[in-house]
Amino acid sequence: MPASQSRARARDRSNVLNRAEFLSLNQPPKGAPEPRSSGRKASGPSTQPPAPGDGARERRQSQQLPEEDCMQLNPSFKGIAFNSLLAIDICMSKRLGVCAGRAASWASARSMVKLIGITGHGIPWIGGTILCLVKSSTLAGQEVLMNLLLALLLDIMTVAGVQKLIKRRGPFESSPSLLDYLTMDVYAFPAGHASRAAMVSKFFLSHLVLAVPLRVLLVLWALCVGLSRVMIGRHHITDVLSGFAIGYFQFRLVELVWMSSNTCQMLISAW
Image (cartoon, rainbow, N blue to C red):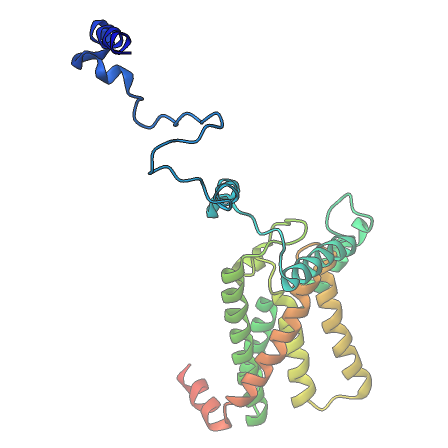
């Protein structure tokens, strides 16, 4: 035994790799994975067997994606309902756009449908109201016409502001006319012609004494103006319905701030 031990020490001393300058070659580089044991237990007291849940936890962490790469695969019920209604609105609006272009099914009636829409434009209504106001000689007539002019100006500003905020395009991307640019009615939501027709018809029904046939015709005119905007492809159905609602609320607002006859006379004299 002593002879064999002395021979082993002699071999270690003669081994070049055991020198001090070569000891770093025997050490594993930093960051290298530790070799797995082949089933033999380490004799050192510091080695501990891994916990049974560590491997599963590491696998779960490796499978987790970064937060910015995750997608919401389960949208809410409100999102599904809104997208469904939006798709139905676009589909129905395209089906009703029978006068949207020259190749449409009702292309021959496009001029007549556009003429119906012009009857609800803001420029003819403002010009006609100012002309009637100049020709009017009664205080009651001037009071009604001045409040109608206020309602028309309010309608133009409200529609232009909401359209500028929403910036929704029409179903057929048709370009606005020159009159539309003058009243800043260049986007689809809400339909300015529909809001104006609803507001004017409600205004006349409340402040003018009309026979029943005329009242029915006035309501039908407002509906035809809104339908014509969908038929030529300028607005969606929801744009027209929203325009009707905005026109009604504008009428209610004008009723709340109704200008008296003295106020109207003061404004007319200031001109």
